[in-house]
Amino acid sequence: MGAQMKAFVFSLVGVVIFESLLRPFISIFGTAPDLGLILTAYFALTRGAVEGLFFGFVSGLLIDVLHPSLLGWGMLLRLSLGFWMGGFKDNLFLESFYSRGIVVGLAVLIYELGYHLADSGFSVPGTLYLLGRYSLLATLYSMLLAFLLFYFSGKRKPKQPEFSP
Amino acid sequence: MTEITVPFKSKPKVAIALTAGFSLALLVLPQTVRYSFASAISKTVYAPFFSFGKFLSELVTVQQTNQHLQSRLLQLSLENQALKETALENERLRGLLGLPAPAGFVPVTVKLVGVEPTQRPTEITVNRGSKDEIRRNQPAVHLKGLVGKVVDATPDAAIVQLLFDPGCRVAARVQRSRVLGIVKWKSGPYLSLENVSPTDDVAPGDTIISSGLGGIFPEGLVVGTVRSVGSDTTSIFRKIELVPTVAFSALEEVFILVPKRGPEWERK
Image (tube, rainbow over all chains, first blue to last red; front, side, top):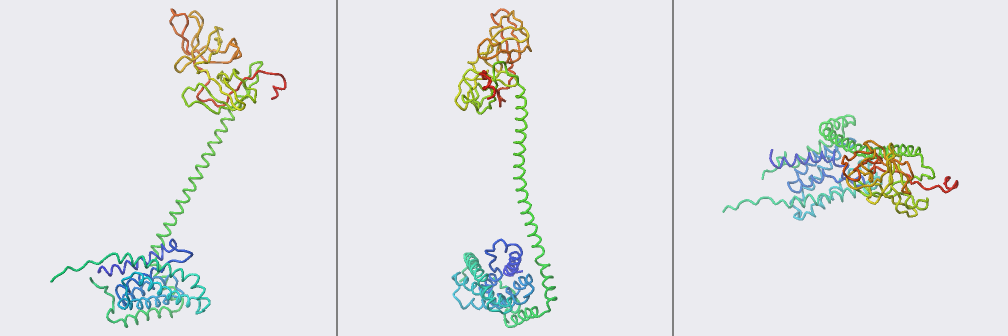
């Protein structure tokens, strides 16, 4: 298994540990960051759209099994967002970790909108309430975590290939 | 750098179709099937972590309970200690109640509030003073015997000079043979009986009591027991060592013998 595949698998394990153990401890007002989407964004923005799609698909499955009433819907949203974020890999100025964080924030907001829309039976007032109550804070929290993730991952410079004339 | 070997890397449309199709298929499954599918995956993937989380949570609960119980144990231990102290104090006070006061004196109970932090203290401070008619030169006694005399009194406290103070003298006699002498401290851990001639009848084990001749201590208060009697017959006086009956390092309550002043005073 290559190093990057290991990163893929470890990130999925990280999502499982986060959802099963850590979520209650870092929740603020009942809201926790969406680590699944943050890591989907990481793979999409650093590897490409298909990688983002697959990570969104698998992490979506792992998260959806905890809320089986909408099993499949979260997966669909996450894989779509993964693919969408992968489109920014070559089309957006991504050296700044701020822009990556903003992409994550947008993705979380879209995901929350889509999920709550389905969760509330496509009721607009219900969705707006859930968005205001949970999603805005979750978006900000996820953006903050994404800033940190991209900042520290950007600090690790890849090895430069040796010059060969 | 090796790329992630995701399937259909070069065919994103196929990847989208497969993953989205699978998701939609899950979404349209009957609820029971969907729930059993989710349950199967959840049990496989999450169960170990949920168990671990439960274990950690229980560990934290046990630790908190342990801390609470330790704190409660300490509290109860302190309460128990205080109750034991109260019981001992009660016992001592019951004993003191039975102390017969010499004629012409009223015993006033005082509690020790200050003492020199030495192995053999020479003075103690007690919690009652001139407001309770305690004055200079009044004798201080304990259930077991003579303690000393008051050397100073303020309205709310008094200082008692103990027998081990070099300035304290007690006119005494041997209870058995009625031989007279003076008890004082010279050196070492014992008191000494002075001014006793080599021919006088004093033996180890004799009880020494106050003679009442000094004008301060009434007659008959136990001072100590003869520990050793010097055998040197050539000197003018014998060297006699006494063990005081009172344990000066463990004093708590003592009586000050206040002279009687009539029936009203006795009631007080």
